[in-house]
Image 1 (cartoon, rainbow, N blue to C red):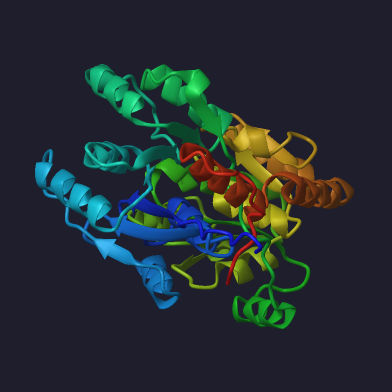
Image 2: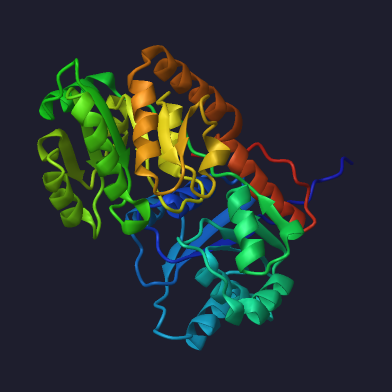
Length: 388
C-alpha cells in the first residue's frame, strides 16, 4: 500500500500593526497576505489603534481576518492580555510585528504561548535619537524575538545604533511592490483635465504632506528651476497637516499657478504616469514604496539621500541624490536632468532595470515566508507568488 502523505498544518501568521490605512507598512502587509503558497500559510491581521483602514477593508473583502483592538493611553497592559488571548485562541504560530510599538505589545503578548515573534522596522523618525530608557526593554524584547528585520541597511544600522539591538541578528529585506500598470488613455485624460500641454515638463511627488517629507524644500527648489524653465509644472499628490502651509509657501514663492495640489487620490498611479521626473524630498525614509512605483514606470528620480534611499537610487545612474535639506543641490539635480534629455531617459531606463532585479514583491514575499518556515523548523521553499 502506498504511503499516504500526512497533511501539514498551515503556518498561521498574525500581523500586528497600528492600522491598515494607506502607507508603506500597510502595503507590505497587503502583499504578504496575498500569498498562502497553496495552503501552506494563513494570514491574519490585528490593528491595535482601533481603526481598520481602507486597506484593511480590502483585505476583509478578500477573506483575510482583520481584527481590531483599541490601545488605551499610556502603557496598556490590557492590550497585552487581549493579544495573548488572540494568539492562543487562533492558534497562531508566528506573530509578525510591524514597527516598534506593535512589536512591544505583540512580543509581550506572545509570552506564555508557543508563537514565535518576528519584528520588522519599516523606517525611522527624523531626526533619529538615542533612547537610553529603552535599552533594557529592547534587550528583553530581542531575547523574546526570533527574527528582526529592517527594510534597508540604513534602517538596520539605526536599530543597532539608537535602539542598541544586535546588528548581526537584523536581516535586511527590501520592500517590494508590483510594477505599476496604467491605462494610457486615462493618463491622457488626466493630463487634459490638469491643463498640462504636451510641451510642459511635469515633475512631482506622491506622499503625505507631513514635515518629515519636507515638501517645503521641494517647493523652494522648484521655484529656482521654474525661473529658468517656465514650461515646468510641479504636481503634489497627497494630503496631510502641511497642506495649507505648502499652498501658502507656493504663493509666497510666486509659483502658485505652476504648482498643482491634487489632494488625496485613489489613483496615484495615473499621476505618476504623467510625470517626466519623480521627486522625493524626505528628511527621513525607510524604503519609499512610491519611489519604487515611480522606478517601475521608468521614471528618473531626484531625491534626498535619506535613510534607505541611497540604496535604491544610484547617483548619476538611476537618478540624482542631494543631501537631506539641501535645496541648492536638489534644484541642481533637477536642472541637470532638465538640461539633458538623453540623460533623463537613460536614468529612467536604468531605474526600471534595477527595480525589476531587486525590488519585486515576489522576492520580498518569498524571503518573509521562508523566515516564517525557518522559525518553525519547516522546509523553507517558497515562490513568493500570490494566490489571488
